[in-house]
Length: 224
Image (cartoon, rainbow, N blue to C red; front, side, top):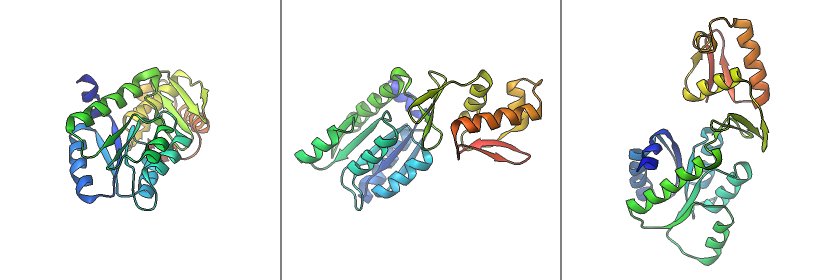
């Protein structure tokens, strides 16, 4: 049950084009997760993934326009580690064979029980924790591993300084919120100057790449 409780700190992207099933399942997931991002088709799911970077992904296999398999294939080109599982009303062999190529956590047949869903979600948490793969995606090509304290950019591990780690973890802790200059300086040590903070942020932003750390002039920094 400890692994299930850890879902309260995680986010999930759930995509299904069946309105009744989507709404009912969303309510269940909202009881378990910190945040549930919901899509009604494959294109919307891929768009949400690219902007919100959830920890876990749950996809219906057949959706209009872009199937769950196609969404999973696109995501796997970017992120090889994110726990991803498929739900389906079908057991056709060719679909299951394609799914097997995607390093899925599970392939669940509808209708499924709450218990079976929980088993799959617990396995997702275990995968996230294994070898430090609980990654925070910063932009399309960059991830941060809180376990190894390293930046992964285009599958290359880049070292970070102690101050860079402190800043990055603070911004991720308050992801979606502005962290003020004063808060950053206080966290780093009050002896750091505004100029030194700006230099540190410029160096960190350069390492991570574009569109990760945003600045609100005269206020602070944030990660979307």
